[in-house]
Amino acid sequence: MAQAFDVVVIGAGPGGYIAAIRAAQLGLRTACIEGWRNAKGELALGGTCLNVGCIPSKALLASSEEYEKANGHLEAHGITVSGVKIDVAKMQARKEAIVAKMTKGVEFLFKKNRIAWLQGFGRFVAREGDGYSIEVAGVGAPETVQARHVIVATGSKARQLPGVPVDNDNICDNEGALAFPSVPKRLGVIGAGVIGLELGSVWRRLGAEVTILEALPTFLGACDEAIAKEAWKQFTKGQGLDIRLGVKIGKAASRKNGVAIEYADDKGAAQKLECDKLVVSVGRVPNTEGLGAEAVGLKVDGRGFVEADEHCRTNLPNVYAIGDVVRGPMLAHKAEDEGVMVAELIAGQKPHIDYACIPWIIYTNPEIAWVGKTEQQAKAEGIAVKTGQFPFSINGRALGLDEPVGFAKVVADAASDRVLGVHIIHARASDIIQEGVTTMEFAGASEDIARIVHAHPTLSEVVKEAALNVDKRSLNM
Image (tube, rainbow, N blue to C red; front, side, top):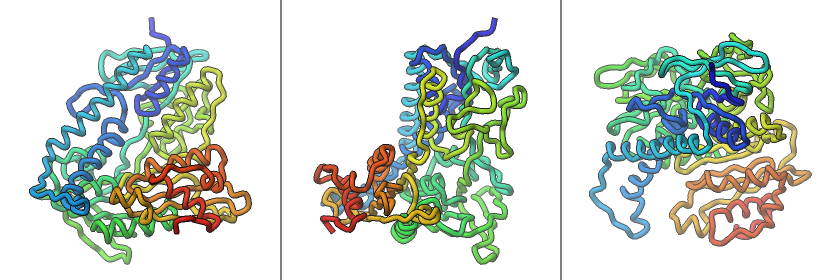
């Protein structure tokens, strides 16, 4: 007789495993289907994020930052270091150890919460009354389980570019770019988005000459214009990234000694780039192939996204979809919160997510983080705004850390003073942005940030000063 569960989650990435844990906490008999194998061929939980995405990339970013500091940035502190070398194999081993610790941690949480890990890949087979039959296959002997509620959390995969065949040797997606055995002398990157900039930054710090080809005519179009302008200055003039905008990729050919990329520049002239390795980072697409959606009538749009409302309900009763397979930003923390929301909805609670308060982060150096509307978005929507900015260059803590680059910007409604967006570019922006997120979740005003006591000396004082500057009463500028 087939196993029966209150909740079956398909996929154990950040959205899926968090959904499973919360469902189990609420007393629901829960199973999670996952058949991911790591580079060693071992089954692992955590999905793309923990295995070949967020976690390993941040580990390499940290290692490359430490190398760059030791290779010249410590002199300002009176620390002289010579003969600095990079052991890429050891760096990669450290990254893999962190990944293993995190994925094993999820496995422990499954055991702790009595979640059944069904090893394999799940697909809908049939609708059975108020529930569904789900086949689990691809690892051991296929089996079919019964689920009263189903949460689709199958994540996303790297988008492929016509004429640029990824082999994860010379031409790589994010997975291959995280596993280089040595530093390429010349690195090409297609795509100046989050992944392209982060991975380009890692290998640039370690000594690679990095050229980034971007199809869009503008740089970081999703960011506030002031932030994008500062980022362009820091990445190109300050760090030497060669970023070429408005290009049209033709084809790429992998050769014995590297890769040749043919493209047209922003004026339409034919160009050629030769490099040792090429990273293709042109976005991601939902991973819904093989889900068996047609077997039960689950609606999937032409781009592969499962159709879902603001509470992640699909067109089918008791079937939900979360994370990268539904509308909205492809962000791990968005998927996690959706997982919690859905589990609580199944348990009869009434949670919700304010999608306007989801933070975005680019883990370059300086980091870029924002939440809410840009000044340009607000004005385009006909909202009268007032803004305030404050630089880290005159903040005592930033100077002490030798991290003076960047600024914070607060965008507020001109009539109500309600904060509409907070934008930060700084080495620690990923941590500082949370003040903006919290303020917006509570519908706070710039005056609220300005009146809250901020410890001194801290980096968070820059956000307070930016909020004060909304009404042009900054105290330290």
